Image (cartoon, rainbow, N blue to C red):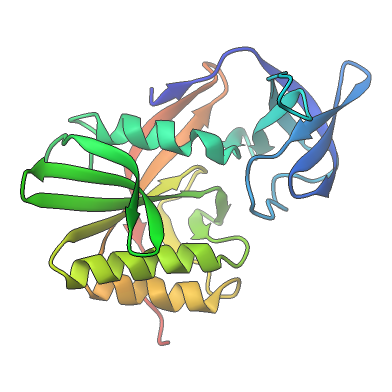
Length: 236
């Protein structure tokens, strides 16, 4: 178990007036829910689909609920990017799950050039591994695809990792594969620039680790499913 949720409520998705807000029906009432994911999520957030929400009222918030997951096929897919850090920390802190040689001390939200990356691991005093985390909720026919919307920020993170690699540092991307898939490919038709930069980064030695983390409705937990393969680059 990578992460476990408490007190999730099942509802029916109605609409998404903007990318941050959704309307969900629960117990013959309609509630306003915060969507903490910038993606389009059209295959998950559509009228009539089942979703899981969590009560999170606060004086500092405009909404009382968070969108946590949405139904896909026979399961659910996490669609709250605020949990990506907790998932990544669980993976990086486990000797069985970490894609690196060992569990290393780390700092989170670390500045590098003009970017802020998610983690900097420190295997030793004179060695660092810079890690950026991306969550991938979209899959089609068993193939995970990212991004589902153009991402200039995502491309810049890759460019930053390439700069670090060119200076002799280790640099990596931890891809959280949040739906059932056995293969990953950057989504070329959505963001050709990201597609090109992704494979350029790999060619220059940036490490990429697609880790499958899927939602178990019986436990309301996220379970570790191992690494999946990356599809070879098509001619650019």
